[in-house]
Length: 78
Image (cartoon, rainbow, N blue to C red; front, side, top):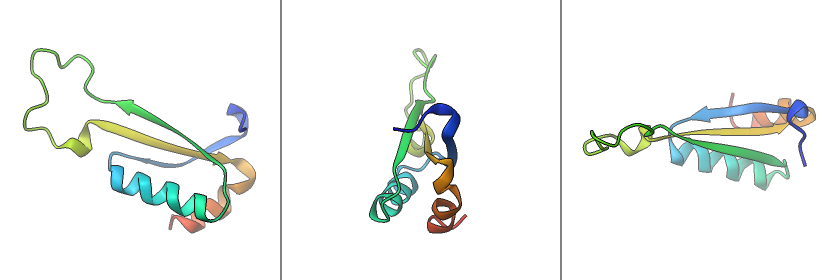
């Protein structure tokens, strides 16, 4: 378990494909990770989401323990 003061953000983005790639890369290399998904459609009750790019509806965040930060960034190409 990663305590909030020990975790570092290694990915933030709107693409589910990129999020899944990062999660898979970290998992296949044994790096423990946590994530958070934030909806970007709050308050859109009247306007809806018709015509909105689905990749823009959510923001994905991936975190790793600070001791794994350098290795994780190398693995995901940052």
